[in-house]
Image (spheres, one colour):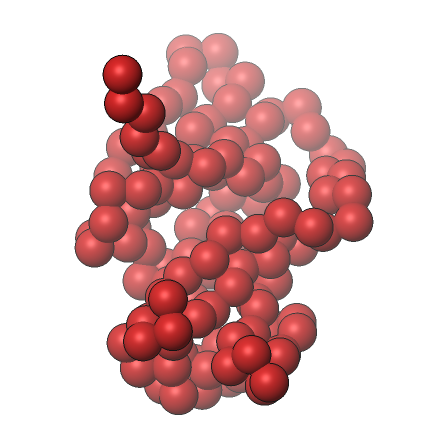
Length: 124
């Protein structure tokens, strides 16, 4: 028996804003969408085009309040081949929420306040 991770889910309040953020910040693009006829939710799967793992964004029509993310003790991590260029992009976007120079990493925050770790490829 073999298990393989295929995706993580983030619930979002503004799907279009989140789609734009992930495209601009991490070059992610939509690969699949689920929309029921009643319009009660939309699920969009995003890919980075480099790995099999996907990010599932779920929008719920009736949700109006921000999601409680607890103590923000979970995150997704991305490696990048040009750490300086990624840092410059995210700095320009204003989405860097925490930096740890001693470890050589930083975190971005998406529109719903989920944290995304950025790691230089050679450190992963």
